[in-house]
Image (cartoon, rainbow, N blue to C red; front, side, top):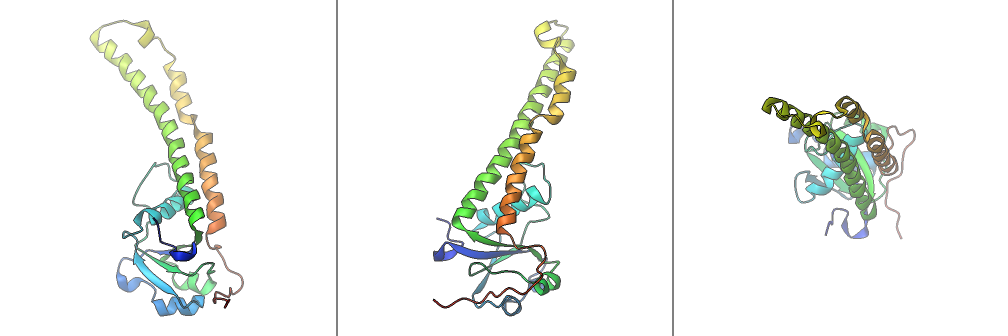
Amino acid sequence: MNNLLGPHDAATVVLFKAQFKTDLPKKADIKRLLHVTDLNFFKSRGQHNRTIESLERALDIVRGNTERRFSRVSSYTSTDYAVMHADVGSNLFLQLKYASELIEGFNLTYQALEELEELNDTFREMLEIGEDYDRWVKVALSNRDRLERAGITDASVSDLPFDVWQKQAECYARHAVEDARQRVAVWLEQYTWPSHVSEPHDNRLIAI
């Protein structure tokens, strides 16, 4: 079972990218800027690699406008991530000071992560639909050429609307792909930190 978020079904996860360990923000600095007391750093390619990749993938789908079904490397691939208590908000000082290292912050629940996995899978499937049609057209063209090289005539293979098919392949399933991309965008809008923070956010735990 994925226990990234701890026992309370919710946590804030922040992705960072640093070439060297010394480039990462210091724990004490983040705690001071965000007014949090619980904070732990982990390597992105560690125990929760799959979940972190899912977050990175969502960013690449929407902000990177990717057309790839899957890639482990993108502009949003992190090296490390921080986990702290739920509903921690960013602030402008953090975003400015660590602009080169900070990728994105997420306020997550396990349900949100399950939703994201389904959305990412749907996007991949929509890309596959378009790729399947494109591949089918290329196979049909290849079969026509094979018959020509062999000096064999078969109208069911050679006399087909290849030009129409090739043109259709350019737009086949494009609406489906962009619809799936927009669904991931809606998820990101709901669960990521705002791009700009206009006022301080009190992240201190409230005593119950």
